[in-house]
Image 1 (tube, one colour):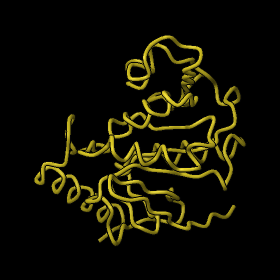
Image 2 (cartoon, helix red, strand yellow; image 1 turned 60 degrees about the vertical axis):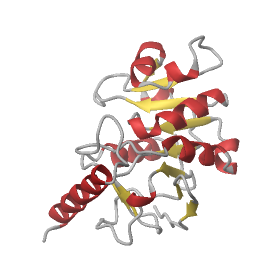
Image 3 (cartoon, helix red, strand yellow; image 1 turned 135 degrees about the vertical axis):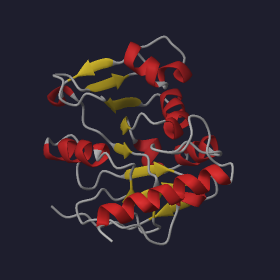
Image 4 (cartoon, one colour; image 1 turned 180 degrees about the vertical axis):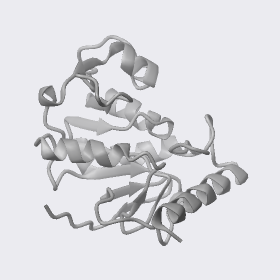
Length: 212
């Protein structure tokens, strides 16, 4: 079986398992980074991490399972950077600074709120990023990540890395359900790898080694 076929088969298995066990939440698991029961608990655990406490600027994905984390980061005064669904636009990033905006963090953390209130920026206008947060369909305890198949996270990371907005030592974090932590995930060498996995039950540090 080809790599792409194996990856898609695994995605389908994870989406089905989350749905059948009642773990998947609105808007459903299939075809996306799946929202899950316990996302709030995972976000609470993430906020206790020293890497999160020390971060001033956090790049974070716009998917629904990371909504609680985005809200809590904003409540803690962190500046958020989100990528745009239209990466070829002149200003494809959104900056949300809760110290300069009046709406409640719960509103700013939503996709609608982020696009309404966020400041649109070009790559060269971004501040240095202290933490990179991404969603996953599945991940191994060693940090091998499976996304939904569009490659957005890997491209965003590569772009930020090549422009000096993040560095190899910048931690990469995900919040995820225990059912999505799997023994094996088919990946390639260039695929994005996770440093810190946070589930509602535990924190996994993966000891990923990155090289240029």
